[in-house]
Image (cartoon, rainbow, N blue to C red; front, side):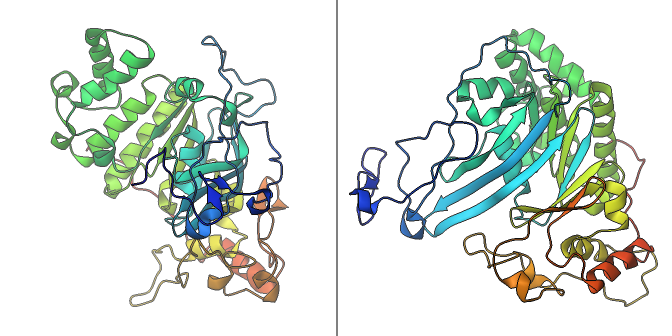
Length: 422
């Protein structure tokens, strides 16, 4: 029987640690803020046995710590974030050196296919990765100048919800089916602000009214299954904004909603952002959802950023072949009857066995030998406030594809607006 006090010992290990110095893996120093490494980390079996230390914060902040960004400082600044999942099958490198920033009142959209690492990035920022199997093994996450990865769980809990909040995808799964929606919203006030139940329920009703839920006073004691999909998503938004956070992370907030309801949810998020001057991170794979709401876009593939740019230039003139492929696959009004939409061939790579070189090369029609050898391409400047990671940025075929999209051959996706609340 395997228990925390009786770990399975792989060959060469005793009690979850190398049996001799020769059996230990040499691990270099972590080039980030000083962290404490968990000495009781459980062993990882099979091919995942060789492991890097993971970051575990120990700093406890005073309860009256002021969360105010200093002049010239970003509200949220993620630097070289690295996350891996240790499983029996091996180590899946889910996030590989992701860096981006967010300012007050700004909307950053993170785009990419399912499995590209968007949600894992958000969970690492929030400090809600399931450990094990997920571990943050490197990087820094600065919020108002403080590296959140250095904080002990007690201090992280004071940040979570009050300073940085998250709207989870699939509201029906995220909400607890055995508690009323009012109870779940009111819990934010009872736990963080120590309100009594009556006052917390009044705040819950006020928030439900703020997110345009009809008859909030009557529906505050209803259960999640008694609401439509759009209304459940509004409940999730109410919970997220309850404590007036400075950063709101919306993870696929329009999943499984029809386009009219999608537009209403996005309009509500924009309205709340303007009202509270929040920084908004919008995670999605839907190009149409972000076209009219984002200020900047970061495109992720296989746990890496492959392109970042302001929304207008990226849609008009994408530089990375992956971004070009995403935009080319968007349906257009001028598509002829029977005409096939271009598609990106193949599937994203397995995070357990990433290909050598550029991770996109097995699916890239512009790939050459340089793309298949060495390491992944670094992000380089390709214009004002623009970065892209591709060995073939100057290839005439890649430049021509970018110019073709810039001439309007592929239209910028748009969202539907209007309609009654759903």
